[in-house]
Image 1 (cartoon, rainbow, N blue to C red):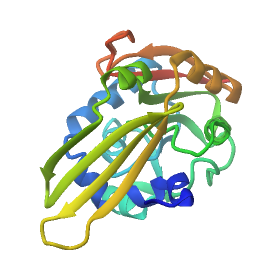
Image 2 (image 1 turned 90 degrees about the vertical axis):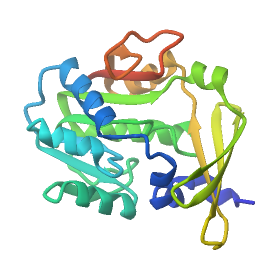
Image 3 (image 1 turned 30 degrees about the vertical axis):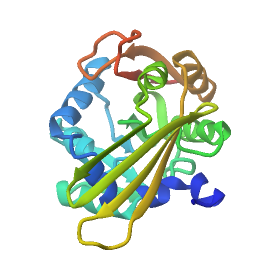
Image 4 (image 1 turned 90 degrees about the horizontal axis):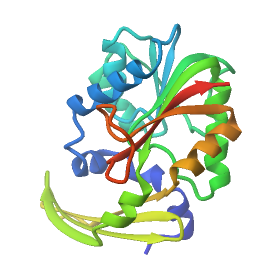
Length: 247
């Protein structure tokens, strides 16, 4: 059973090699489509772009390929190492999105892809992260926040599943408590070593609530998309993707 402190900071343990084994289908093609949507939603940023929670660097690589001066930030040392392997010349920084290690107005653009928001123990900390996003963006800087579609998560939640992936027997249980979707993950290595247990916790924000949270932080979400091809956000949309500017 995970301790309360481990539950609060679940993201410190989860984003490593095991995470990459569970999500192998998140590939370069998807990352390219997401970056293209960002670039099509506003004029190209006239300055550096921060890829917030850059993970293993698949979006960062596409930003760099598009000719942008992109900087990747992540809390996970393992993920930053993978990002370095993917883009050896990239600029990478380790840090917490609630306290970004950059000067105010350092960036002309900011991206946050594949649900890298809503991780923290309280919505106040989510607001703190949004305020930091606004602080490091120059006025008029563009941003894109790629998030869950809360209603789809509630409607289509699969309570439990098992499978086999890259050296592990996998067992996943999902539930929703209050406004948070919780995924309990158990991984049994095929080599007979001990079972590994992880958890994901993401707060579910309705579109208008998330837009208001961003607005209070100084981020004006002017566009909604429902997928990486730029489709409309509706009841069947797979994602909630918000794009806009820092005020």
